[in-house]
Length: 308
Image 1 (cartoon, rainbow, N blue to C red):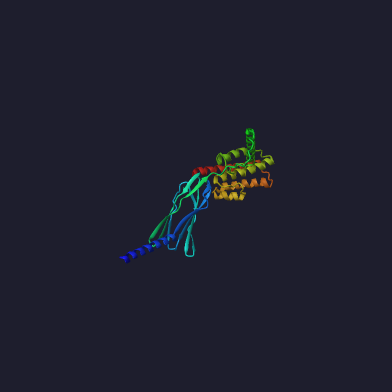
Image 2 (image 1 turned 135 degrees about the vertical axis):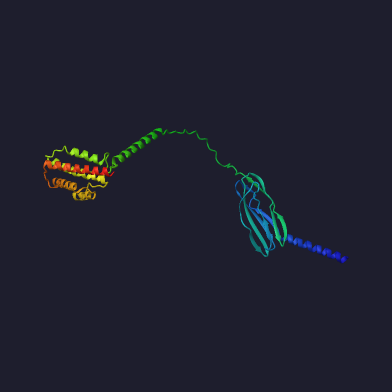
C-alpha cells in the first residue's frame, strides 16, 4: 500500500513537471510601437509566438472588423530559430479615425500538435486616439479690411466678338461663292427636244445676210454645229468635236439613207471650204445647204417617231 501510494505521488510529480515545462515552452504575446496616436496615424501591432519545435500548427484569424480600428496592412508569419526555440512574428498595421480611448481586443491563438490543441488569448491594448494639438506658438494676425471685388461686365466684349465672327463668316462665304466654279450643265442639255431646238436654230440662220463674207462664214459654221448637235442628242453621243469625215461615218452607221447622206456630205464640204479655204459660196448654194440639213433632220425625226 505504501509503494502504491508513493508511486502515485511520483507520477503526479512527473506530470506537473512536464506540464510546467510544456507551458513554459509555448508563449503568445503582443506588442505595439505606440499607445497614443493622432487620427489617421498608424499603429504597428506585432504578434509574438514562441514554440519548442516547427511541428506546431498556428491558427490565428484576424476578425473582419474591430470597432474603432481599421487593419490597413499585415505581413505573413516570420519564423526564426534560436538554439532550438522557434520564434514566430506577425505584424498588423492598424489605424483609427475615431477620437477617444479604444481597446484593440484580445485575439485568440490556437497552437496544435499531434491532435492536441492549446488555446491562448492575447492581451487587449488600450490606444488613445486624438486630434493634433493646436499650434499655440503661432503669432496672432490682424484682421484685414474687406477688399472690394471689382465686377467686370463682359457684355460688350461678347457683342464685339459676335460681330467680328459674323463679319469673318460673311467674308468666307462670299469668297467661297465667288471662287466656286459654277456647275456647268452637260453639253447636250436643253429644255426642249432635239428636233425643236434644231428647227429654232435653222430658222434663225435663215435670217442671216449671206452676201456678207463674215456672216457667211458664221452661217456655215452654225449649220454644221446644228447638225452635229441634233445627231448628238438623238444618238446620245457627243459628236460636236468630230471632223466631217468622222461625222459622215457615224451617220452611215446610224443607217441614214445614201441619197440624203450624199447631200449632207456636199453641204458639209461647202461649209468646210467657206470656213477654211475662204470660199465665197453663192447665196443659192448656201440656202440649199440649209434646206439639205433641215431635210436630213426632219427625215431622221420622222424615222424615229415611226420606230417608237
